[in-house]
Length: 162
Image (tube, rainbow, N blue to C red; front, side, top):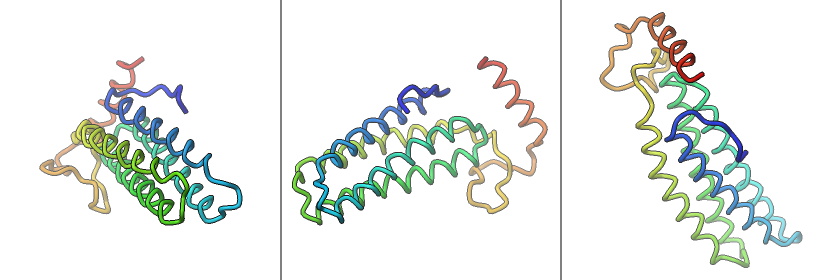
């Protein structure tokens, strides 16, 4: 997952931090003894959540529509909170190397700052109306936006990147 080609610098920055978190999580999990079943289960949750963060960041970079990017951002946030919860639970289940767990929180704080910059980079003008009403950008009347115009912009954007 390290050699992924991403488009936007904000996406690259948050993805790199996600890789750091995933690597730290894997190092912490590797220290769990095989006989500690509950710790191994929590470790699995920790690893899956860190992986899902990376996958959703990649999905967001592939898409260009605001509402789809926001949906992926919400899922990234969810899994980031899962990482923090699982790390906390691991500490509650007599994890031998508790001194490493605060490192996850530190990395997640750095990730949160990058997350805010990343979300701010989403272009609300590239939005289609979210029929659920959840991811409609504030201050933009989507009824006045021509969907054909958005797709023309998307095609132009793809050609400029090539």
